[in-house]
Structures are given as C-alpha cells and as structure tokens.
Image 1 (tube, rainbow over the protein chains, first blue to last red):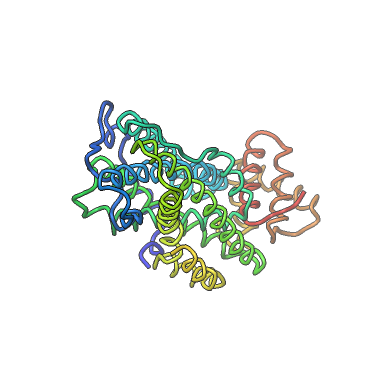
Image 2 (spheres, rainbow over the protein chains, first blue to last red; image 1 turned 90 degrees about the vertical axis):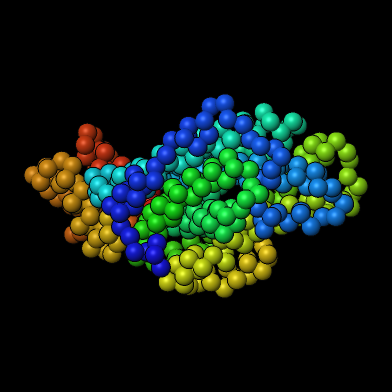
Length: 304
Length: 80
C-alpha cells in the first residue's frame, strides 16, 4: 500500500511541494457559476427524483455542494485539535514528525479558511439562505473524548474519502462548477499528505497498544461513525427546508420525505460508505485493526 | 517516540536529555524514577507519572513534561 511506504521527512517534502495559498484557489472577488452543478452526478442520489424539475434539481445539487464543503469545515475543527495534540507529543522528539504535524495542523486551519470563503461566496450568489448543522466545537468535543487511536482512524477515513471523491468523481467531470472543482483539487493535494501522517501516527500508537485498547479504538471508531450519521441525517432535514426556500414552492409530505431520504443517502454514501469500503482503508484495517473488518462490512451495508 | 515498552523509557530519556542536557536530564530522570519506584518506564501510566513529575520542575523540564504527558495520553494513559 503506497501510503504505508513513507516517513515524516518525505511527507514534509511533498507537503512543501504541493502547498498553496487560499488566494491562489479562491481569489478575492471571485464568483461561482450557478448555471453549473456542484456535486458530481455519481454522488447526488436526488438526481433520480422525478417530481423535481431540472432547475430544481440544480438548486438541490448546489445546496448539497454547499453543505458538503461546510461539513469538511465542520470536521476540520476536531482534526486541528487532534493534529496539535500529536504535534505537542513530538516536542523535543522527532523533528521531522514535529514538522509534519505542525504543517498538518496549519493546513487544516487553512482549509477551514478556504471553506469559509467558499461559504461566503456561495451565500452571496445563491439567492436564498441555506441552513447547515451547527456547533462544530461541540462535535469536536464528543469525538476527542474517544480513544486517540479511534480519533486518528476517523481522520484517516475522512482524508481517504476526500481523495476518492475528487479522483473518482470530480477530477474528470466537465459538468462541475470549475471553482468548486478546483477547491476540492487543492484540498485533495494536501489531504493526500495528511492521510500518510494519519497512517504513521496510527502505526506508532497501535504498536504498543493492548488488545483492550485496540478493541476500544474499533468500538469508538464505529460509535463516532454512528454519531456522524445522526449529524448527516440532520443536514438532510435542513436541505429540505433550504430547497423549498430556493425553488419557491412547498413540497408535498411525500416529496419532502423523498428529498430528505435521497439527501441522507447521498451524505451517508459520501461520508460513511465511501470510507468503510475504501480499499486503502480496508487494507490498513486488515493489517492493524482486523477486528474492524466485520463491523465495517455491516456499516457498508447500512450506509449504502 | 517508537512504540514498545523499552521505547517509552528510551524515548522519554532521549527527549529529556535533548531538551535540558545530559547532566540535568540524568539528574531529573534519577529523581523521578526513584520517586515513582520503578527502574524504567514501561507503560503509558508510568510515562504519565514521569511527565507529571517533570511538570512540577518548571522551565524546559516542564515543557518536556507537557509533551510527554500528551504522548502518554495518546498511548492510552489514564492515571490521576
């Protein structure tokens, strides 16, 4: 597995090579093209809904794109905290690891700035307000209360899905809004390095862990995934309100349920299923957390 | 810090020496291990107790203690 064949010095070198500034990705004064879709068709379950017109589906797709970007902003709150803890642990230790962790944290703060700028740009151009789940700090607190190995496993899961989404669904699409596509290209470039750091940190923590600690990490990982599913379900509910506002009509109860269900499935597939079926993630679990494989298969079925 | 029981001890000592110098580091280590009643650090909880000892020393030793405390917690220490 390529992400295992690395070390902290190589990660720092690559990180320096691919680094970018927020202004390079979204310049001040830039605007989104709202005639385009944001999310790739393969990730947008609601595209199948027949009671929405093409223009209504476009609005819902864009609402999903806004929430998708916001959810990365959201999870980065806990990832920054996690990266800072791991950096603190390397003080007076391995200088390459310390540099890698500090860059990791700094880049995640930068990603938050990027997603905030995207959110501002979206809100300025979309036309109607879009609701998003609140309190990233409260969620960060819940996640960080779990075992450090589980927290890092969840982070690896998230770093890998950002790569999979960009490479498999966004990179070669001619239909996606170009600025949105570029944002996720730049995000992917740095997250690819972060995934390697997650692996290095997990291997370090796993080596000396007791069987009980490993089992706790597996249990905590799935507990966090379950809690995240609840958060995504809330976002799907909010999307129904946002799309009614955007299209200027009230959907019937059946239609509302169908939109909510389709959105929930899109989020679950993007953020959960995509992780628990990721080949690299499963290879890593098989080698270091084999007890996670059976529940991962069950989670894959539940979140498909 | 590499994992493994010996790695907890060696990693902590290396970092302490790197930060405060060999003479002061050896003195702190000797005092701390005697206080803890162990010959070397072999569990995350022992590493945490060692870190807490350094935290009370102030200065750079305190800073090493803070780093080692986080290391111990990341490795599952539950002490205190």
